[in-house]
Amino acid sequence: MSRPHVTTPDFQRLISGSRLRLRGRSAFFATLLLHAEFVPSNEVAAAGTDGERVYVNPEVAASLAPEVLDSLLLHEVLHAALSHIERRGPREKKRWNRAADLIVNGMVSAAGLPTPPQFQRDEHLEKLSVEEVYTSMEGEAQDEGEGEADGDDLLDGPPGDVPPRNGRPGSSPAKQWQQAMAQARSVEAMSGEHGHDPLGMHRELMRLAPARLDWRAQLWRFLARTPVDFGGFDRRFVGRGLYLEALDDETLTALVAVDTSGSVDDEAVRALVAEVQGVLGAYPHVKATLYYADTQAYGPYELRAGDPVPDPEGGGGTDFRPIFELLDAHEPDVLIYLTDGYGDFPEQAPRVPTLWVVPPGGLEDEGFPFGDVLRLEE
Image (cartoon, rainbow, N blue to C red; front, side, top):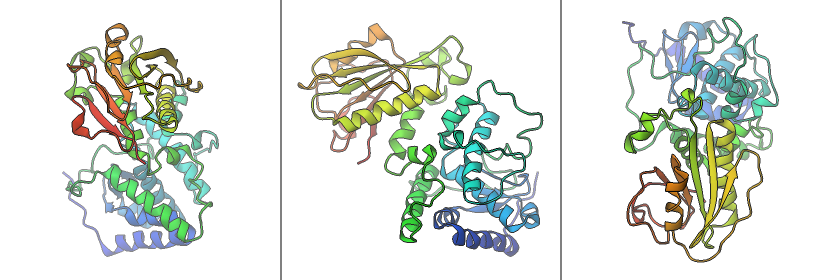
């Protein structure tokens, strides 16, 4: 068993020096590094993160040139800040790490810092989301030895020589990094650097913008559940093996319903449908059918990545029952219903996992008799 490594003044000086140098380069990056907790560990090759803390090999850090150390630390902090651990889900670990590295190294390179010698930029892919890059790498040959030295830095937990840490009460690592991102944006704007941030045009950051991080990330997780995630739902989904890395002929089908009674605005409709289309582009095995509904159902429309959003239909009162009456005919694996929640619910809960997506001003959570409630941010 490895002996726990104790933080030393020399290690802290290395970290402080890097933070100071990055402050002169980018207020945005410097703020993210100030938020990060760096922990020494002899068990990581150079550095790694579990999405909460960044673990750094102190001997390696001491041997690096200052700019290389800055690049290494920023690389890991960006992985954590962009929730690359949490978002991986059931995907193949090495390919996910390669996709995330392509994006993060592109950001580091755009900031004028060095990247690994073998790294080759792809200015198109690096501006996409990591889910899209991962999908684009399907079937791509991996060079022998690639990823061995620097491709295992997304850790499933703390290294063995670091004791586990009790998280901050009531705040997940993803929420903490969301707050750090928002603070970094504010500091960047006050410093007069606004518009020069190398992350600004990256879809990774646009998709994880503070106002939308929660609902979008939760929607993606709902549409890409693993067997573990289905613990609170009908166990037949687990029996059918509905986890994406093992799907061949099987598909995961989603029924998407949108309340068009007048209580949900077009912007919310298009935001939800566009995000579902993003999931479809990243997960070829997910299929989705769209219905609009007021007191009756209008559709079906097949949703596909990149297609225009069908014009909404309806405009009367709100009755959720017509959509639930379609479940037997469609047999979806999940149901997503965008509504303010004010309407007539079915008397019995369906066997299909249901996600209510509720815009600002909608019904309180306890008013929904079943399902999960996801709230759009204002």
